[in-house]
Length: 241
Ligand code: GLP
Image (tube, rainbow, N blue to C red; front, side, top):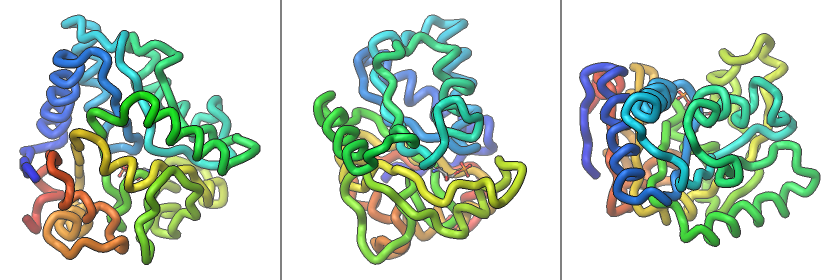
């Protein structure tokens, strides 16, 4: 693992954007694994700026998002579809047909999960996977468990996750309790992984992910076994490191 302590959120975001930009410059048809949440927001802004001002080209890139809430349509502003369109896709030249996000409204969830994995494999797997981390150590929506879920699957969200994400919803009861998440095997098959952590509330999770035992109780800890992980930690999140 390469561990980089960034001096602030801006610094973390610039470094992350440069890694994504480098990936797309070296391999225009890269398969990018994308994350949502507050953490990568500024990274997306930086990438949009690189696209608009320096011609960073996403026209050949393929994207696969980590997760989506169950029961929210792509036009729901709380969905990760909406987040991605609003915060990234609408502002760069990623081709619509190259964008993949699990369908939270799928009638047949198991089929949706199987198809999602099939599409990722069909594209040759993920070249660069971007990850945030939950306060409970989750990646994507792979929640702490007694085992690692390998493939894309339906998840019951932890109360801690529902509580953390309720800040985006008007009412706690509006927060979906279920989601679809890419599995750990798919994430671990990515050629490169970029893990980002921002804010003091992530300090414990990121410390355990990097230095603790490898356990499904801290899903991010599995990343210790990956051969090409860069972790960029903003200073307050790195207070225990
Ligand atoms: C969310 C997402 C994750 C994200 C994490 C942290 O629930 N499913 O992909 O990395 O929780 O979110 P944030 O960056 O807002 O702290």
